[in-house]
Length: 88
Image (tube, rainbow, N blue to C red; front, side, top):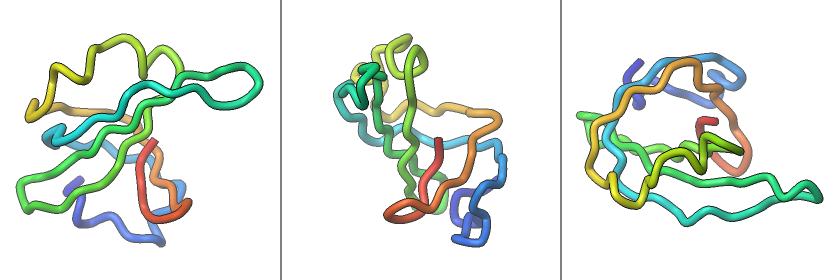
């Protein structure tokens, strides 16, 4: 789905996207169980951008800092609307 097609009413929808990783955050930990979290900024071919939050092993498996401007595809992402539209 094109990123620009995502709207607040898309909340809780499951989508597949292809986009460019334009920016990545460092891994942080959240909660009492110290769950790993990393945020990627994705941009599609229209220039629309959205944040994707990766949790746990998915945040740690790839050295996302070495992948800026990499074209990636993600399946089964959930659309969220917490402090703005994002994916997880």
